[in-house]
Structures are given as structure tokens and as C-alpha cells.
Length: 244
Image 1 (spheres, rainbow, N blue to C red):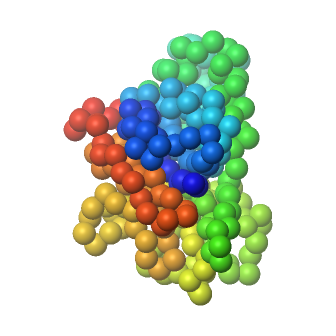
Image 2 (image 1 turned 90 degrees about the horizontal axis):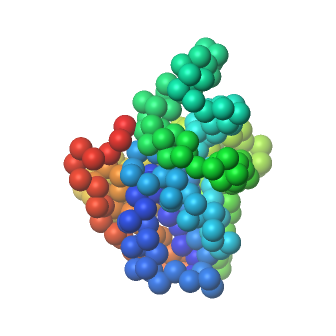
């Protein structure tokens, strides 16, 4: 089976419980639509778990991009002193990342041996910006956030990285008329999309939105391409336990 998960955000316990619930095995394939890091309690452990599985494919998210933009130039020597004396542009990126939940990732990243730090950054740098899956007569376009500056005549490879990573999809309109091409996204918690405000997968207007806001107290979802069904594990995050 082919499964899709998005925005784990360091919720390692829920991720492991979800893999067990779907009976994920080496014969299955999993696409993670970015943002496995930041905010939740175990971002580095989550990323390392993904790295160890050859049948898991990772798509870059905006939090991943933010982390890379800071950690790669800092890697030469990450110390309190070096952070306090950053060039202005790097300091601004660092500050924005910290404001968006990066502190827990940075702390755990700093505790890693240098070789493991390099491996983790390389894994993120090699992540794709999008993936496509064909199943029967349907095409699934997998991105983290959406397709900014959308043009129906535009090929996916012609979009800039930022077009996949930051702007939220317009869930009120179909991007690909005809009912055979689906845009699959994370990034926007589905409780903000669905009329009933429930943390469940949203499937309307040619969209499949799968970020069910686990780190915010919602759920972690695994959507199956072959069956069109979703499996959920409710969040184990206590109110106030998330690191911003």
C-alpha cells in the first residue's frame, strides 16, 4: 500500500503508533509531506526514524527549509557565542525559525555528533519539492503547502521552491478540473478547512488535505492512495506542552 502523512512536527509517539496501526511494512511505501521537525517533543528522533527507512520518501516543508537556511551556515561551530554574533540576514532567519517552533529542533540537533548532523542536513537537502503518484486512472500531486502562482499550463518543474512551501492552497477551488488529478497537501490544519472544524482529512474540490494538526492537539493521519481511506491516531500532546 501507498500511504501519505504530513506535518508530524516532532510527534514521534503518535507517528510510531500510526505506523503500527496501518501495519506499515517493507512492502509498503510512505510519502511524508514535510515538516517532520519543530514544535513537538522529538523532532530529531522523528527525522532519524524517517532516514532509516528506504521505503519512506520525504518532501520538503517550510520548517525544513527554515532549518536548513540556519543550520547549514551555522554547522561550522554552533555555540551560544556564534548564535549571538550572526550576520544580520542569518540572525533574522534564526529569529523567525525560533518564533515558529525551531528551538526544540536546534537544541536536539546541537546534541548530535558532527557526522549525524551532516547526515540529517544532507537528508533534508536531498528531499524533493514535490512527488507524483499514478494509481489506476488518477494522478496525485504531492506538495507540502500548495501551488502558489498556479497556472494550469505550467509544468511542475517550472514552479519555484517557494511556490510549494509557503502559500496555502485555495481549498475552495479545484486546481485540476476533470476529477482525475488531485492536489495533496499538508501545512494547513484541516480543522481550519473543514466546515465541521474536525481534525480529519479533507477531500473536496480535487483536494486531499492531510495535516490534521497533531502537534496542536488534533490527530496524525495516514491517507491510503489505493483505498482512499484515512487512519488516525489522536494527539498525545497536552495543552501548553508544545514548544513555540
